[in-house]
Length: 352
Ligand code: P6P
Image (cartoon, rainbow, N blue to C red; front, top):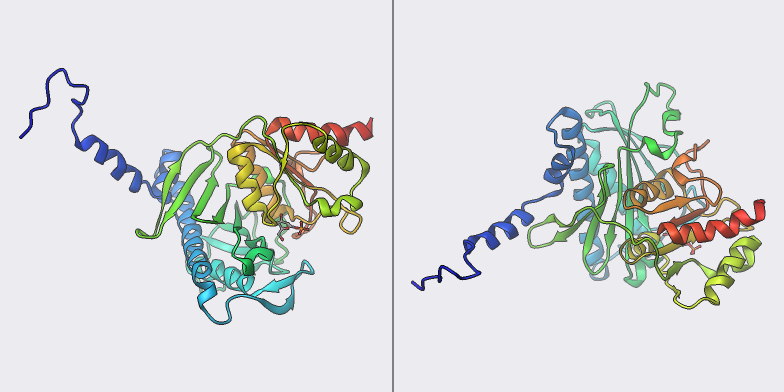
């Protein structure tokens, strides 16, 4: 056996490297949630179980996407139009059903509210009913479904307040600071789950060989400033003058690059990692913009604020907006604090 010289710098036990790798591979999502909360109490156990269910939904949807091109009747349109007035893809319906199936028997939730459903889905009385509500966009970026580009799912978890006996789900019409957990699943070259429970933002990457999301980065912080601006400039003719002025500014200032994929989760993930700003302003056709508050802009705002970024409608923080209806839309400016402030400076200039 080769002796390790006493004065060697490698006097660490060789297994310490192994322990570190093994420990990382064993830091599953459910364990990480309990570590974050430093508790094994019922609320912590609930959140851990909820996140495990989100992970299962992500694995099922990721598996479907990876095989979509090889299967019949997975891609393409259903021929239906959803409550948003958008043509529905077959994957939208599949993903929506996955979240319902995964949570229906969980005993964790009482309702699921989705972009694809006009009214929330209430857990049937013959199923165990929980205290939480899942709000989600099952597939964000559906336009990318049939062209094999990245897309995502967005989720938000709130605790039910009151009894909702009238089935109006009025307790959901509260600002985004009521969220207990939020995040997204990014179906890209690898599948990632990015989440917060109000204690920082953490990256998990799906290891298909394990069938587990493995912790790959903790306490992610967004750069204070970045050179990426992400917006659909095809809407330029529909924007108010301040947004046009901001675009003219980035067009004439060195150091900016445009990146826009058609899937907000993908674009915002880039900005979370590299810095910059994503914006979807109001337009002539949609004065409040296209994006929905409760299951798109609010969960992303919660997450980006936790990473040190900011998210605004242009007038107030996204997390301060109190919706009057389930599918309410908001304009969105989100990303690095300095970039968001720059956009707001153009918008505010008009108000003076
Ligand atoms: P447009 C996808 O439908 C989505 O909600 C976001 O993921 C995406 O950023 C945006 O809409 C794309 O909308 O009008 O630019 O095609």
